[in-house]
Image 1 (cartoon, rainbow, N blue to C red):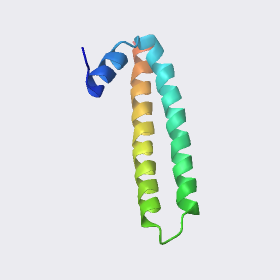
Image 2: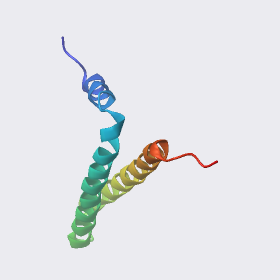
Image 3: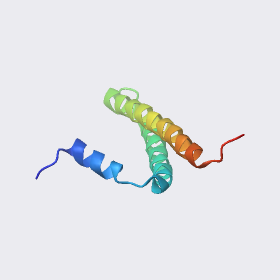
Length: 87
């Protein structure tokens, strides 16, 4: 049976226990932080006339930042599930 990449990803992500999810998100945030720094370095070293490099760098910074912020939001929600309720 052949899965599309989207269905395969849903199956893999859905199979991760909630206890392991938070450390995995933290690792993904760290990786995307490196992607953001790398894209900024590429943009700083690109010539002003190289529109392709500047555009791709901007898109990489934008998408990487959205992914990091989303990861922090999801991680915060997961940690709230394990915290004690205030009375």
